[in-house]
Length: 138
Image 1 (cartoon, helix red, strand yellow):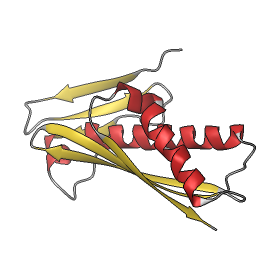
Image 2 (cartoon, rainbow, N blue to C red):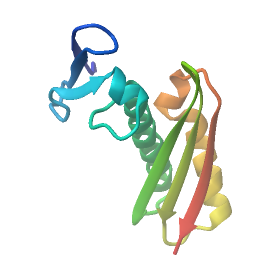
Image 3 (cartoon, rainbow, N blue to C red):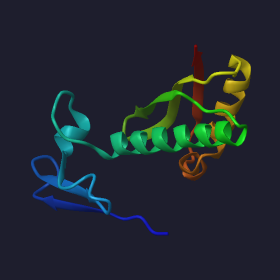
């Protein structure tokens, strides 16, 4: 299996801009620039936001896979991944998941999420601290 994405850029760093596209077509010429990366309130994406989305998706699927293996059927899962940056360095990621799973107790849900925090594919390739919190709803 191979997954690809492309980046296209025009101009200098601070005034230029680019587009990002993915093999699946879900991103097609998505705008990104220095300004969308480092200034608030502008429309466009950035590498850190995309990393957070990838990590949230991978982590959530890892939790759901473990629940499914245990014979449980989660009703819903919502994860927020927060990239922590200091200057031009990513220094950590915090994952916060809220799930609705009939027949599950909070301690077991937290244990499953801690395992996913360490073992989802995106977590495995990152060399930064990763933390998580889990919330189980009725």
